[in-house]
Image (cartoon, rainbow, N blue to C red; front, side, top):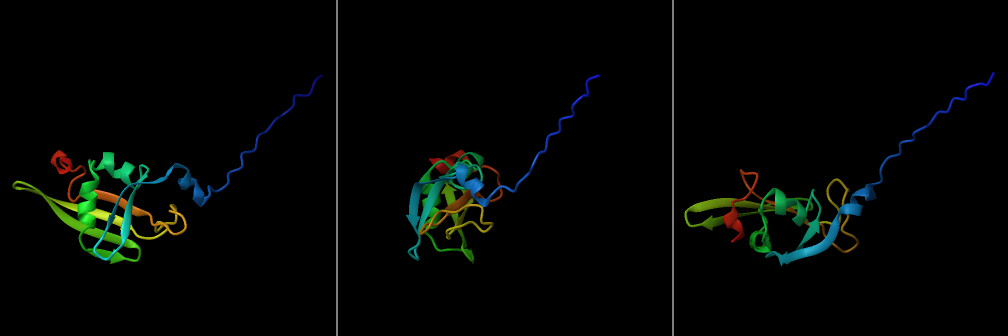
Length: 140
C-alpha cells in the first residue's frame, strides 16, 4: 500500500511599498508655467491618476495653454501644498469655469507620489467645473 502524499501551498501576503506608484508615474514634464508669485509649476505626464495623462483623456484638455492660462493668474485657494487656480474660458457667448489643482510640494498629500528631491509634483488635474469633459472648443 502506497501512502498518498499531501502537498500544501502557503501564500504569503506582504504590504506593497509606497514606492509602487512610482513605477508607473511618468515624472517627465510636458509643460511648465510660472504663476504671479514666482512658483514654477510643472505639468508632468503622470499616469491615469494625476498629471497630463489623467486629464488629457478624462477631462478632454489637450493643450498646455489651457493649463498655463489658469496658472498665470493668482492662487484662488490654498491649503498647505495644495493650490487651486480658477479661470473662465470664453468662446463667443459660451463660458466655462476651468479649475487647475496643483500640489506644490515634493510629495502628494497621501505620500503615494514623490517628485524627487528639489522637485514639485505640479499639476494634479485640470477640469471644467460642472462637467465630466470640457467642450472641444476649449482646445482650439
